[in-house]
Image (cartoon, rainbow, N blue to C red; front, side, top):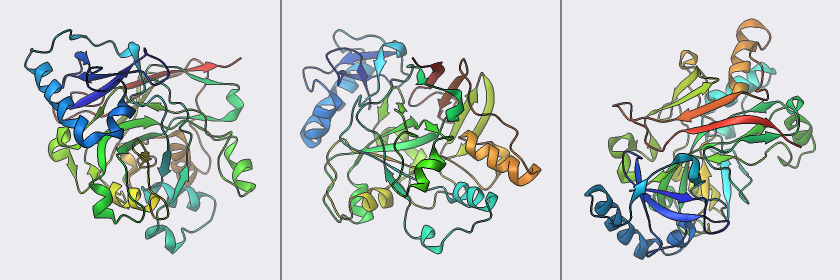
Length: 327
């Protein structure tokens, strides 16, 4: 099934079930007011949402309506936790090689992960508001999974069983601020503003053969100002699957229902497939040409992130955002 949240009913939105073709929806308020409420009691709520989904697909759902993507908030407008990994080591290897550094051996067995911003997510059509172009505005197209309650010290296999939904994120980064923050040795803060989530989250079974080995096996398509930017394969060159990433986050603490776990920027060894963030493209250019050629995003730019099935039909709905000057 596919789930989304309308921009109504308060900060956490109103839960709706969405048709497979993303054209229609029905409010699920008789079952759960919000997606977080559904995740809090997923084992009992999910079957009822599935039944409503079946009614929608069969044309039997009362009060269904045409879906307007602009009316959607993020599926989880705010989450208890967002932990973001860096599971695509070709990206890590290239970035470090560009600055003359090697990848530590531990990176191949122990995932990179940080605590990301979760207090508020942008909707799929909300603008990215930034104070200055000098901050180095970048998109990062990633896959995310959403869990129910995960016990502390869960194994990767156990953790995989707690993955209930899959979606996309534009993990906005301000590259000009990152070096100074990391030099302090205390991680990201100002360099990571609010990110945007895809219009809908889907259950893994909805993905069919595209969900194997706790990975999404489809290309991540990105455009900047309507021009093709990349279509890196999500299921290729992913060093750690989502079961491993969730288990890593839960090693010393349980994860609360509604936790979002990110894959990190999608990147492949094969650079002909383009990139999923500007920092990656600029690194490829630096290694090839001695200097980056592609600029970071400017005010007025527009980005689009989408994953389609083998028939070219959008699965999660596209993230489409304008880059806007803040006050």
